[in-house]
Each structure stands twice: as structure tokens, then as C-alpha cells.
Length: 377
Image 1 (tube, one colour):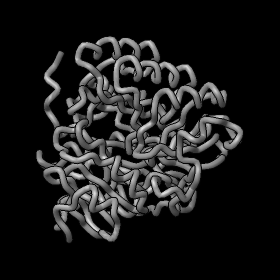
Image 2 (cartoon, rainbow, N blue to C red):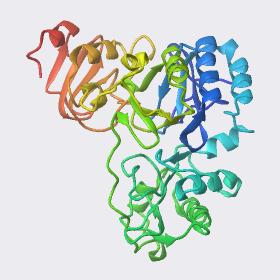
Image 3 (spheres, rainbow, N blue to C red):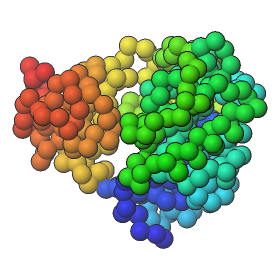
Image 4 (cartoon, rainbow, N blue to C red):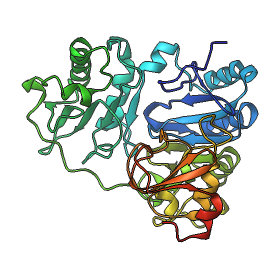
């Protein structure tokens, strides 16, 4: 086994990351979908080799926590049997592709995602977190999700390839879009400084050639909310944590044909169009106004060695909209501003209003009891 203590990169299946409760193993489903057999197999693997909880990440990936060192090889074998494992660690690292979830088979989003996957070997060496989004619906759904090179719908129709950080992109079409993505990736790789890891930061110091600009993108799509949709029943998971047993029951009880993932702590039971006839609904977020949809909390103590507080217990008890409870100042669960941010500090909490976890707090040293009694915010 390798040494899994190194950080500053995203975990994978081959190269997990060590946390307070064991290894963190990330699975990257192709085109943001697992079929029913894969989903049930992953639920079983999560209960056999890990903590029994499947995390949904902001890259529409799935993550298993609490994997024992001596179970890692067996887990890889299970993932390989489910066709959820890349042939090599290099291909896994390069397949950092975010696919908009509301695709139809053979539309531009689905087709171009598969084409990009098939040509990963043509990409240059890129920083670990450098990623792509394929988001070619009527309007981009992933504009606020992290990606460095984006395929999107143009304002006047057609497609564009857009460098993240640029307001406009280069006009393209289905036949040439992946060629353009690969060419732009090579431009980034050959012009960036060694310490520049992302496209947007690169463009702040290096002008983007004019031939990669000029065509405006379409207006953003309306965001998804829990409830029926054209692809199936949308449900939410508090903090993105999905109990494997509950998910397995939902898949079998609803007879869903697959599981579609999103980067917003929502998932779709493919082919299921009625919500309230199923008992499993109570295990998930099914209403569009549930405050947990806008509540972020990292795993916290004892699962993360950087944390000294129980984050999710506090978040569940408070149920405050636009709340972020962070185990430390790093803000892993939500690296953006929130109306209220609570930051763990030596067993207590610091309070930040309208900011991020690393901003100057307005109150310090709040105990869990202080928070639960109210009159703090």
C-alpha cells in the first residue's frame, strides 16, 4: 500500500486520502450516472469495506469514507467488477470531467462527454485539480461549478468552448469541440507558470488569445430542486451524505433504472416520477424549501483530524438557511461566503457573518450550548 498522508490533491480510487476515520476513496462515475446494478453494488461495498455512508461531492463524484487499509484492495476489486474503475491511476486522474445531469442519450452533453473520455490520452500533463465541464443543454447548468475548460451552449445556438475566467468562448460544433478542448488544454499547459494550477488564475496574468473569445454563451439554466423531473425523481441528501442502506432500499423500492448525480447534493432516481407513494422518501430531502439544502457542514470530529467539534450535529439542530458549519478554518465543505459561518476552534465555535470560514469572526468561543439556546445569530 502507498502512503496516503499527502494532501493538496483530490482522492481517487487508486490513490485514497487518509482521514480521521480511515481512507477516503473517490469514485468518478462516467457521465454522472450509475445503472441500478452498479448502484446496488456500490451500496454493498460501502457497507462491507467502509463506513456505510456514500458522500456526493461537488464534482458529482461519489466518495466512501472510513475504508480500512486492509480492505482497500478488496474494494478496488469490487469497483472493477462494477466497471467503476479506470484501467490506470493516470486515466482516473485525467478523467476530471463534470457532466451536466439533465442529458438525454446521444445529445451534445452525453456524446461529447463520452468523446472526451475516449481521448484523455491526448491531454497534456495538467495540475491535479484541473477539470472540464460538458454542459451543452439549452443553458449552462454548471456555470457556478468548478471547471477550467467548459463546453457550453452559445447564445445564438451551437456550441462554444470557453476558458474559465473568460466571459466569452470560441464557437465550435459537435465534430470539433473535443479537438478544441484538447488544444486549449495544451495552450494552458505550455503557457502557465509552475505555481499556476487553474485556468481562471492563469488568465489574470496571461492574456487569452482572441481566437478563444468572442462568442457569448446562453443564459444559465434554472437550478434543480427536489421533486419530479423529466429524468426521474430528484432527492436531496443532507450534507451530501447518503446512507448506503437507505439508497439501496430506494433503488429497489422505486425500481429506478439508474442513479444520476449532480454537484449540488441532489441525486436523481432515474425513471421514477412519483414521490409520495414510496416509504424511502423520509430518508432524504424531498421538499424544495428544506433549510438543509442550503446548509453546509464538513464531517468534523472525530472523522477529520483537523476538527475539534461535531459539525453536523450542530447544523442539524440549528436548521438555519445559508449556514456553514466548518470544523476548522479551511472551509472544505463550502469555500464560499455564507450568511452565517460557524468555525470550530479548540472545541468551541467562532461566528462569521456574511463571510468565509477564514474571515475575521464577529464572536469567538461559543459553546454548542450557546448556539442551541439561540439569540446568537
